[in-house]
Image 1: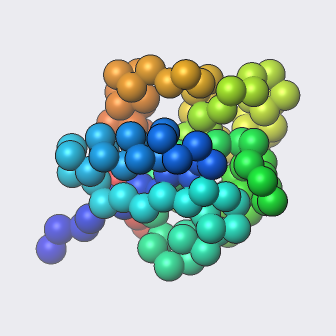
Image 2: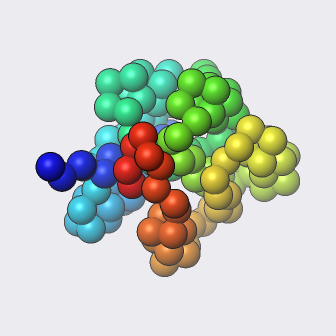
Image 3: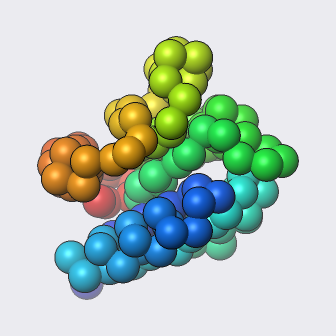
Length: 126
C-alpha cells in the first residue's frame, strides 16, 4: 500500500499558493491550498497533511495561531513557516515548534531541499 504524501499550502497570496501547488504536484505530492487560518484548520481536519507550508500574516486566524493549534493537536505534522515578516514571527515560529523558517521571497531550491530533508513521522509518513 502506498501512502500519499499530502501537503497543505497556507497563504493569502494566491500567486504563491498556485505556484507552490503546481510545483509540488509535479514532483509527486498531493496538494491542497488555504488562503487563511480557518481554511487551513478545516483542511487539516479533512485531509490530515504530513506537511504544512504556512504564512504567518493572514486575515482572521493568523499563522501563529494556526501553528500553535497544529502543534498541540497534531504534533507529528511538519510545519515550515514562510513569511515576509522576519524577527517577531521567527521567534513565534520557534516558540511554537515550527520545523523550519523561510523568509520571503522564497528560494525554491532551498525550500525543496528542506522538504526532502524533513524526517518522517511514524504516524504520517512524508
